[in-house]
Amino acid sequence: MSTRTITATDLDVRVRERNLKTGIITEKDVEKHISSLQDLESHVEGFSVPQPALDAPPAATEEADAEPQGDDA
Image (cartoon, rainbow, N blue to C red; front, side, top):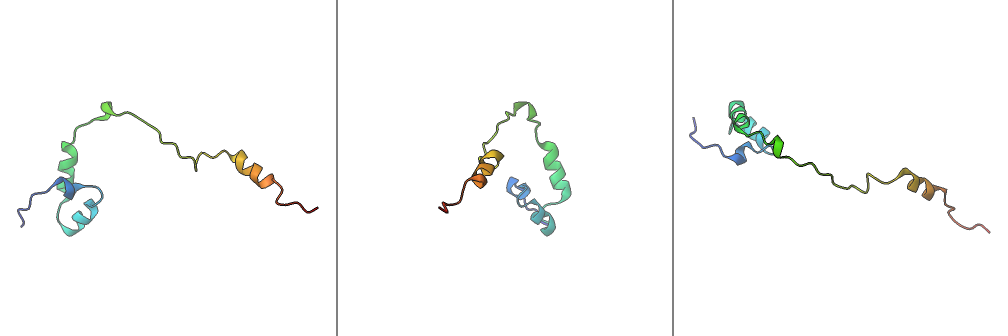
């Protein structure tokens, strides 16, 4: 058995599954880490990020479709 020290990097959610599969950490290590985290919900401040591509008004696309494509005269 290894005496390797588990670091925060080993428990990072981006590599956690891989480390669980390879045996670097165990489910018990993850549970212990999660239970040791403080509840900081009262310190959270919500914010929104504008996403123009998702917020485009449907009328703008309808108007573009209704415009004439060329002059046939």
